[in-house]
Image 1 (cartoon, one colour):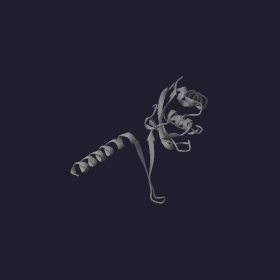
Image 2 (tube, helix red, strand yellow):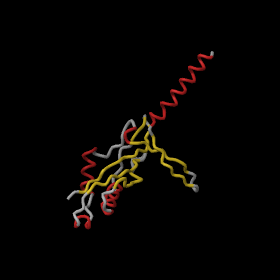
Image 3 (cartoon, one colour):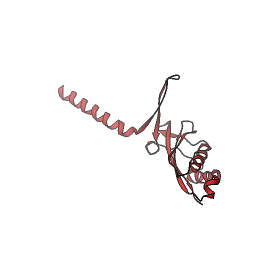
Image 4 (cartoon, one colour):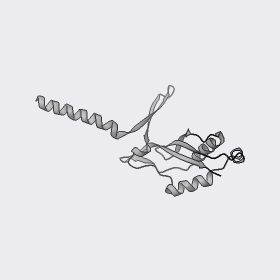
Length: 146
C-alpha cells in the first residue's frame, strides 16, 4: 500500500514538473477594477501547435509591408536608416492588437511608422493549441533602408 502511494506521488510530481515546461505561456496582466478582468493568456509564437499566419504567407507579409510602409520625410532627408523590432498579439479572432516597439531604430518617426504599418494589417489566420484558437505574441522587424 505504501509503495502504491509513493508511486502515485512520484507520478503527480512528475506531472506537475512537466506541465509548466510544456505549456510555455506568458501571462499578460490586465487588471481593471471596474471590469474585474484579471488575466488574459498570450502564448509565445514558437510554443503553439499551429502558428498564426499572415494571409498569403511570408511573401504576402513582405509585400504588404513594402506597399504600406512610407518613409518618414525627416528621416529620409537626414538619411536615417534602421530596423524597428515590434511585437504584437494576434487574437483568437485573427485581429492584430497590443502593438509595441521592443527595440527602436533611433528615430521616433521610424518607430511610429512601424507601429502604424502593423496596426493596418488585415486579420491573420489564428494560432492554435490543440484545436482551440489562442492569442499569440508575434515579434516582427520592420526595416527602413534608403
